[in-house]
Length: 285
Length: 282
Image (cartoon, rainbow over all chains, first blue to last red; front, side, top):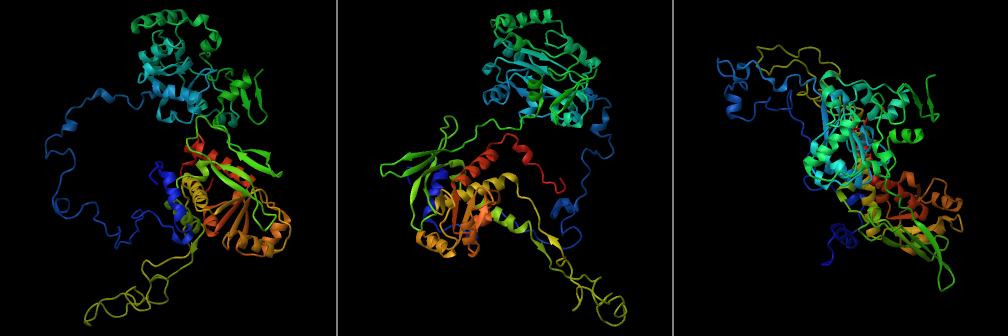
């Protein structure tokens, strides 16, 4: 058995010499099962949260933060701005460039179209919850040096390094905003289409996001395309790479395809109803 | 473009991995008879372990004829033999349909006992409020079993999948798994089947699994008279039955179906949906 290295092979080899595995001779792993005991009394004979003897039962501990008559530290300062409006802030779930590269390597993403929120959700590995104010995905720079994909991607937020990594490889990136109703349709289009509800119109970003999505530097979807061309060069100079000429790329059309600012599914317009049963698209007159 | 967009938008429920289907070649041997060779496709980027090669046998004669060789997928037929997972599956199969009808009466349900048996004070006796209290002979039972008690629970999905692969692997490792080309036997006499099992040393009990639930007439008739020889379709394959019988006999089509279904479950990319909590009314 010395030559056997694989534990599975080793186990199977051992089984050959052992008696037949039957219902009568199998057992759970030792000590893996704990029998439940019926305790006595109202709460099964427990200690009512006070622990076992000693300070927990006999001493009167004050509640956490209580300072015997002083104004507690946690109420002493009336203003803590760090979490102001936290219940209104938008959250973007992070995806690192390394994770994106892995998605491409494992063929989880279709690179023939725009990689958008729907395609990322469709991988089954990432998801967002719009009702918890998660408004989409952000690209983080971890693994940006390793990124090799030539893709057309649309995310909701991206760091400079992530933008640079995509443009360096001849790709195309836009940051785009989707309102909550659009997100509901995008995270599970099948469910949306089955409802028989028209595809919603994408709303414009709220005021505090308008600046971000109009900025060419952030590759906002509302920014002037010419400004973006300039910013592509600026970023190339900042990170010191030669910008591939996307205009001369044979896949130029595919790489630069973008959605309309009011559109949520590429190729489908707001107001249309997709019938999965009849495999038809119903358009308003 | 539109169709592509719709397709792109839909959830991708298909798995990207190619299905590992057997290709069966009938090769002529030197003796003139045709040998079956059923091979798994070469998987340059997936398989790190060699497929298992197993003889394909016949059922149409009592003597064993080796008809050829079939390759069994190592992820299904040579998986880690987790005895603990097999045990969990057996326990689950026993329990999920078990309803305990053991029943005891509480002090409230036992007849009588509404009256205080004797005054609280003054008699020198212990204080009691009812002659049906659990302390009394003939009194109610405290915390006794109540009928009906269901023991239904759902084993996690992938524990069930691994239970099947583990059991199939154990059966193969212990030489208790036999592959036959089909279930054609020459007579419907149970004695033929008993003789065959005796001759091939398959142990008294045999579970024969075919691809679907329509088996040839002869084997159905022959096995129906023998309680310890049972026929089962692939969709009924389960850990308990495999362990209950000494020998497991699979047809080649059953092997293909089992391999295809189990590999699909082992490799599915939407497995997280299967790991959600089991809901009864869904």
